[in-house]
Image 1 (cartoon, rainbow, N blue to C red):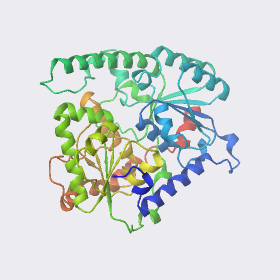
Image 2: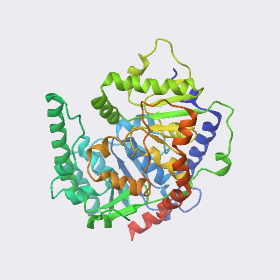
Image 3: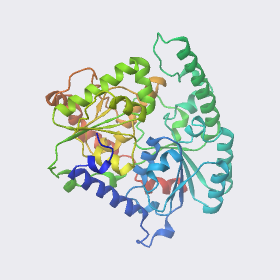
Image 4: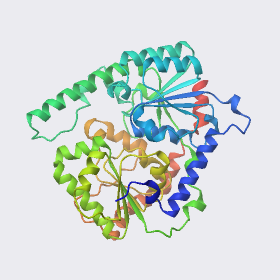
Length: 427
């Protein structure tokens, strides 16, 4: 079992990585002599890899953002400081953000996601509000990404306890029940406080916010979305035939790992995951697993003899992960709203879902918006993770999505381009 991303790469994934790096170069280039006409956008990210993915979906291949800057927390900065060379910096304090806003004088300030910054203890809600006020006082347009898909603005006055409740087993012991109660209270308190001022700003989403067939609220008028056509894989790259064996990817976040172990038990879930990986390896596939270090250590203990077809990784740099995802025969998830899924859906690639994931489990009413926006009205099927995996079974499982692919790909393109969106924000 190796831990070197280059060793896990296939010939086709290397070509895909080169394409992603070319998009990065376009973003950072000033050679078009248009730089002075482009706005300065300052992106401030929390700890979530999904929010980094969202912002990169927005800016890659778009020279429009050549004057922009991305501020990362230490968790993301460690492996992604070179994701946009010369445009990435570290942030850690309110004072640092205020200084950057004062010195850089951006036209637009984007928090991704502002709601999560207090939840992750990066800034207090009061400090975040001060940063927003300082920006608006300098005529900076403030925007936030919103992992809760607009529901907080509607439900905060009614009580977030009605829609947010961390999903735990019905027979949970007293200790777990108490931990849930404390965590729920923190979420309700922090999110309500953040929403009290973030609700005033435009809300950014990575897919067209289709409202047909779902309940709408006044706050939905602030929905803003985009489609970056530069992320459509070139036909010559899609048609490349690999000389290497096909590879599969399994991805789970730390919080979804915790969710699965709460409901199934750590031992049972780890054994289940190991069984899935070994089934793939036995089908002569290279199996790449991406997950939290605690789970990786448990998986390593499942066998005394390393299986060269199984590669276990902690979270990595964007281009390493994405190049393997976009060239995988199949990708498997325990979360319906994982943001790395989106670029695959935009390119007609099917994914295999085991579970709705922690967010959809814990936030009432969210799931219908996930289906309406992220899947453009098509509800995916879920694969039983205890079921035996066969190549024939997988092909049959994704057949329904393949039938929907042309319609879905067209639906995503209804959103404006990144430049169109941001020009509209400045009007």
